[in-house]
Each structure stands twice: as C-alpha cells, then as structure tokens.
Image (cartoon, rainbow, N blue to C red; front, side, top):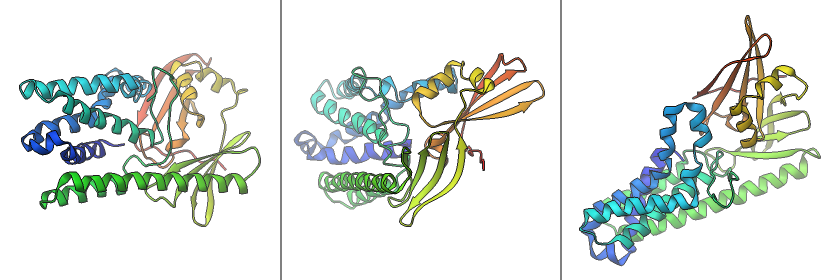
Length: 318
C-alpha cells in the first residue's frame, strides 16, 4: 500500500489499542503508542534506502527481506525498545505486541497488492501477491478517516476501530470472493489453454485483465458486462537475437523470474538498439510502474542500462 495508508493505519491501531487493559488504564501512553504503531506500520519500507544505489537495486530489494517473518519481529523489537526506554523501561510487552501488529499489518496489506512481498522468508523466497487491493484503496482510507472522526468526537477509540477493522476484514474478504468469481467466469468462457490474471482497480466490480496466450498477451478490462480487450502484445521471442542479447543483463533476468508478464519493445537507434522491458501488471499506471531500458550497440554488445519509474504507458500493437 502507499505511505499515506500505512500512516493512517498506524493511527487506527493506536486507537484500537485502548482495548488493551494496559493502554486503557494508562491513556498517557497514547503518544508512545502512536510512535510504535505509526513507525511500525511504515518500518518494513526501510528498504527505500536501496534507492540510493539506483532504481534497479531498489526494485530487486523492495519488499524482500525487510518484509520477511524474522525481520518483522526484529523491527517490532527495536521500535518497542525505544518506546520502552522513553517510559523508564516499562510496558515493553504491550509496546512490542502492538508494534508487531502494525508491522505485520503493513506486510499483509502489501501482500494484497500486485507487487506482493517475500513475506515468508526464510522458509521460501517465493513472492506472494494476491492482486486484491489497489495501492491506494478508497474504502480502507475512508474507514480510517471516519474512525478518527468519531475518536475526536469523544467516542471510545477501541470500540470504534474494532468496528473499522472488522469492516475492513469483511471488505477484503468480499474483494477476494469477487476476484475468484470473476476468474472462474473468465476461465469458463475464455479460450482453452489461456491463463488469466486479474488486476485490482478502485472498484470491486471492475478489474484489469491479462490473458497469457501461447504467443501473445491480451490486455483488457472486466466489468459487469464482461471483458473489453484493448491491446495485444507479442511475447518476447526466444529467436530474436536483440531480445536475447538484452536478456543477458542481470536485472532483466531478475525481472523475468519476478514476473511472468514482461513485454519487450525494440527501438532502433543510429548507434545500436534500445530494448524496453515493461511489466504488464502496471498497465493502468498504479502501484510502482517501471520500465527497464537496455542499450546495445550494433554488434549487440551491452552499452548501458536504465530503470525509469513513474507514469508509464504500455505500447500498443495491433
């Protein structure tokens, strides 16, 4: 999820922490709890420091070890320890519990996005992505804002945010059910041997669709009236020597192990070629779209690589 969602989730967790007897009887601990839950809710993204080594390094490392099971515990321990020191060495178990909840909820939300995480390291390095929620979900944001409004209005925050998080849990379960129903419908009505992947949008009744066919990808959008296909993009050919030369770069090898939806576009230059690699999961310019550019000379020797991030358009091909 985006940073604003993680921050507001931290506020919400500080509110619900008042159901804990320790916080309920010591409301003066609210500022320390806000520190634990807000920092904890953002702590797994400490891997943003890899940006200083370049976009390619950041994309390789993002949501990796910092989102793993053991690192969640380490982050919670460090943050709770700071809060404990600030309170004369008291309340560590309480601070640790709520910080761990905040860190873990960050990872759980990220699992629900397109990019996913390596949340189950060290047991497996597999990326887990459920494709259920957009990077910024209006319902989750609005639910927290309403809860905070009631909190400022004088209502018991523990009770208010208990309802908020029950509602969010039901909402995510609903999106999962819709996701599975749509996927079954696509498989039932679609072509044989085609693999379908759904991409979340702001609306639970509208999904992006990638159809992986034998030689090409089809991109479209699903709503209650069915699928409208908008683009057809050929898969990168193993026989194209320019594509093959670009694949030798370590970052392209990484991308292809991370995503099954890579599309390559060749741009002819006076002094050689540029091969632009797109991850088609980001066709609607959400989450963290990027393009990897591999520059080759006329003899297909590697010259330079670049990774761009931002609002990128996917090329169209008839």
